[in-house]
Image (cartoon, rainbow, N blue to C red; front, side, top):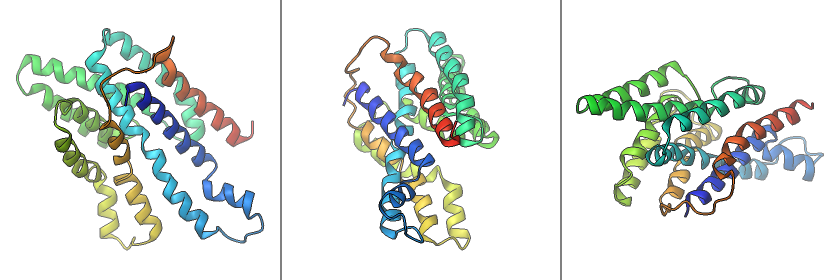
Length: 253
């Protein structure tokens, strides 16, 4: 699977996630198919919960793209500037749609700088860069700087560190790391009386769902794939534009 194919998969996954955020699948289908139903049809709710996993494919692929992009970029400053510009462009549409700040492009930018900081630190003293990177992860997690917090920064680092690992080792690592990164949800689920189907679904969708994105990455063949003029700007432009359109449609403007 080429990098271009992975990007398309991630774009479609993200689009599905955001569209169903605005128009939940169960409610949309109920209006279309069962307009007179007094409550949500259980089968439609089950369908929505099953298809919610589609939207969890995107994030790991986008995080991987930063590790991969950092490794291959010819101009770090231009790469970082591009992320910064589109992160700023996406911030207002992101706020309009979700009601809070810190879109994922800021997370990707912070992850990119963390990789650079790590290499700089390791160049000064062995292990220093890794300590600095972990410090950024901890700070981002507790300060809630952007979407995904320190968890996403850690994933970017792991994708970078494990690039040459054998597939089996990567699988075992992610099977442990992805669920454990949602330790707060796991703790809440088992420490409080939250044993409901809805809570179990939220736990699984957040702690296990992103493993689907990791699974797609296992098929990456290291090739760029199909290219066309402006190919590198496809996701950068798509992100703020689709957020703005969905936000405007949601508000009825």
